[in-house]
Image 1 (spheres, rainbow, N blue to C red):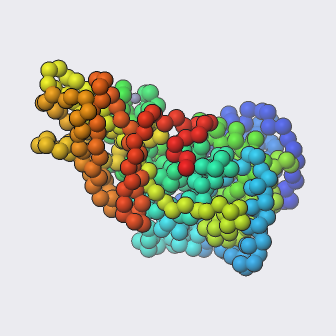
Image 2: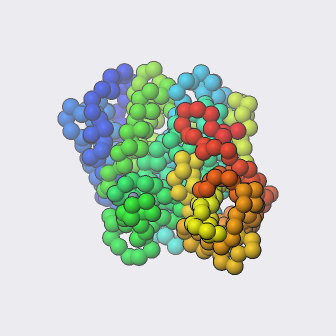
Image 3: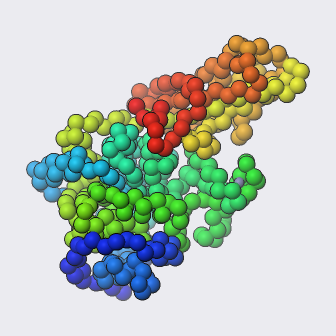
Length: 452
Ligand SMILES: [Zn+2]
């Protein structure tokens, strides 16, 4: 039985958001319904829920429908006028954040949930077999993803909150400290004991049968040996505390929030734009093809594909949308292991030195052994004088058809010296660009070398 609620007019008001609403959110499970069930949830009295309009509290009644809600596209001239308004809002903003949902990845071939060909819609119709999707590991980030990356790199976009777990934001170049992936990332796993994260160029989930709430992936932490857990949030599970706290902190200080491709029906993530919408000093802009429960809070409501809107907005801002470049980072280390014995180690790392698995094998010229599993270690039984150049051939997992790449490592004077490499692959041209980094790249506040 589908339960419906009428949405009364929502008043905008300025409320000091001082109470501990994180505690309220933290204890609320993620409600995504996969069939015709209704979930009604109300928060504690006196908590953040009481400052939400009744309708919002009751929209936890989420339902998957056999017929998806109607999609609407406004005329080109209207979208263009709204793009001008949005570009003006972005120019005037000092704390601009964005909130994204599955709708921004549909043009990359990844289905959404509630659109006409969405996962839940087809499931409700018994047509799961009709799902057409590209492997998320091979999906190319869309022009919306790339527009957000460019706005981040120019320090215009201050923070990104996403409900997507396809990993495309991080792959497109959004830095790890500039995003909250509220529903996890299918390529990320972390240690249960020491919290160390690992990014994989494969789905970081278990390969064996287990219950849905068992998050063990079957791999172990290389730092402490602890059990690794996937980062996917299933129905009924609470959202991760730190990404949620970060998202709320940014929402509270934001003066502009742009929602792209979300029907804002997955609770409690969807309430984050509501925090901005209820702040009288901030603007909320929503771009989605279907109506959303927060439409009445929006200062600007656009019915358009995200890619179309963002292309127009970026054009009006005079900021080009860059092509997708696959960024890889590599550390090569040589250590002495006694007389005429050395150990060469090659590791993939993220900008914050989080280990990233993207190599398939590593070969050293003149050495018979090919390292085929992590850690990629090759033993060298020879003298290595400073200045000697080792030639390494890297083979990648190759989701974008990346060809093998040869890099040179110059042996330094100090034992254990490391070299950092930046590898950039352009899937359009099929070419690699390689450069070395003198120092470890910092992330966060200052200028980073990733940001061109
Ligand atoms: Zn660990």
